[in-house]
Length: 222
Figure: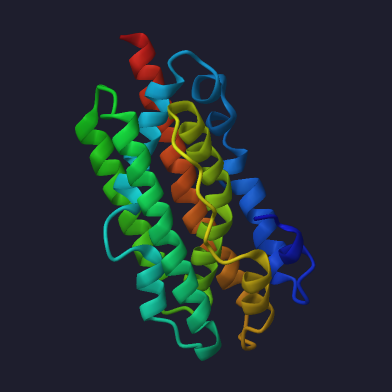
């Protein structure tokens, strides 16, 4: 899934959210491109940590997309939310397959603190997708779908390393997402609420990568 369609959407919202995801999301975090995660002899161990923590963050049900979809007030967005929920369910299944193949998370100091941090991140994301401010929830979910492209790249790296077939990405494509964004009803400061929702989601994802990087360093020091 590319960013081309979103960048040429009739409204500016698609381009705005693409820019946010590129600048503030997982793609810009150094750890996602690091040697330790992509080429190190111990990369499989580090990738297993990624898989388990991602599952802690996005595995519980109902997921963020389901929560936002339940609060959706736009009939024209209903199909998009359904497709997003089905697509993300497939991503969870893929993540589960990878976890089974990769084995347990590596032993790392501070497990209780990690679990508490992930729980706090999930609560923060649930709060933003359930916000009553029009645009926040949609912005957050679009941010999730856009940022998942960078996360999916890491998952695919893990799949290739451990010999799991890489499935197709079934999340809404850029054209479908661009259509929803371009046809949102006019609301005051909609650009702010959309960007706020997306930013809050991206912030939590970057926080996850921060935690993963700290955990990697803790294992190196042992």
